[in-house]
Image (tube, rainbow, N blue to C red; front, side, top):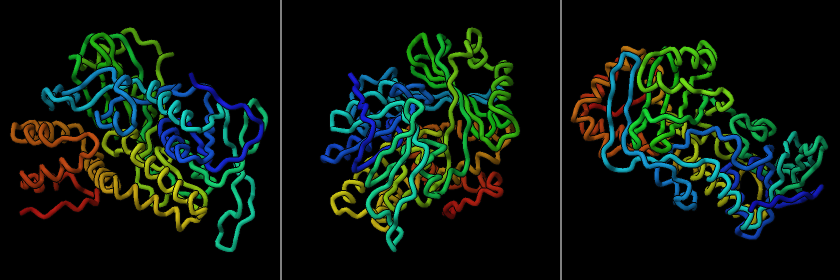
Length: 422
């Protein structure tokens, strides 16, 4: 049972804005060390609304330190479709990913944080910070005062360290003039009863003309229910709703069967941030998760990278509290640590994404034919990892170096520096 605090005024060592899985993981790991942690969450219930495809690697279960009770289905194959009807099957009998109950994951992490001593204030919208006296080195002398709205009344909370886990449109990042996201994927998702899919296979559809800048997916939750989703780049010429309506008219199985009994009230919409933010810290401040663009550029998945970064954020926060040093210089260690963990994957993923953005539907068909050859399928099935796709790209280049010459025609202005062909 989740219990939340109702005090009217609070001071704390660490204030986390955002009670999603990343914010809760940070709060949990700091509170475990005995520090007073408060989480502000603007929604009235943890885990709702759900705005996530809910497909992750099995590695995430142990990373999040939760049990496999959140797993709804194991997935071992993916069918990649194009609008011309071409199809590529990758995968084998090995479990490559799992579909999870995202609401349950959020609740479990929040419960862990509260058992560790973190306090949650629900329906609390952070709206700004007070002007605080600063030292000559531009560090807030004693604390940061955050203003938030609860029950239409403004309240205040003082904190030594502020952590923004407040998503794509991070207020914390704006308040401290931290770099924003480079690109946004507008996405929608819904669950619907359907038995159109193999129970352990994901279906993807990639198209420049129907899902520009991203793709469409169908994930089987069980033998009778699937999760549908699609995304488009915010740079696209048209709205998400316009492209969704176009997609509904496309006669391409299995996608054309999804919409027959759709209730629009069940659709959730959200945003996926893409980019590599070079500064995710300031004096007495760190940002993490979607707020820090710690997201896979090729798939938009944010849970795995976000939880890795949450550990680093909590680690540096505890060190800062131990030393009572909340300066920008000290907190810069957080940036170095998370970039060491996932920075290369994000940077190279963005470069691979630039290639993807230069493809039209005919190019996508041609690439599907190329990577559908048995020699490539073997490499993909052996080395594929949804959390670290750049490693697979390097394996393909190492084992089939001629692919470099083939890919050059797609590079255009992507500014990617591929290894020299040996």
